[in-house]
Length: 134
Image (cartoon, rainbow, N blue to C red; front, side, top):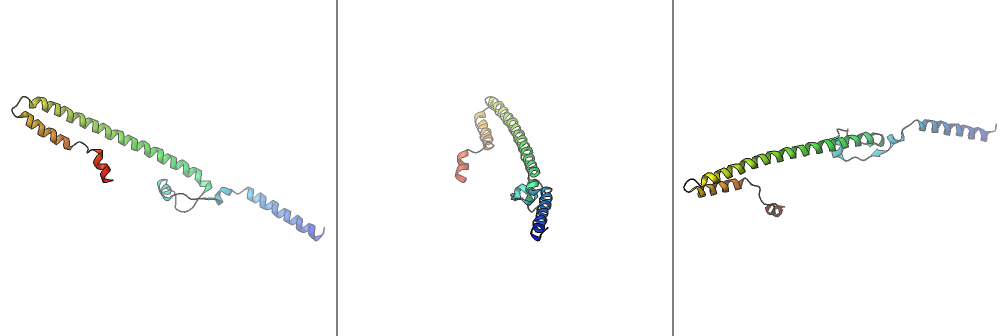
């Protein structure tokens, strides 16, 4: 074998060894993903760079975080609306009863008007005021 053939043969062996070694590596570990810091905090991931190999698990954690917290938030809103409906019905029944009772006593209309005004203070403000503040 001459010198040129030796170098070509050794070069081919080196390329073959490199290819076999690279084939066993996960190249996704060399590609970084820029993840927003709030996402990292919400899924309890470590600070620093996330690789593409970790991205699938992080995405699954993020989806679980969003879906579970959305469901909890929706449940909390529904519970609050239920409490509001109960309070509203109690106040409405009280006002109806008060109005009926106010007709049976002297100056009952004035008393009922005052009580109705106090109940009006508990009602939410019109949206027009909120728009001016923003």
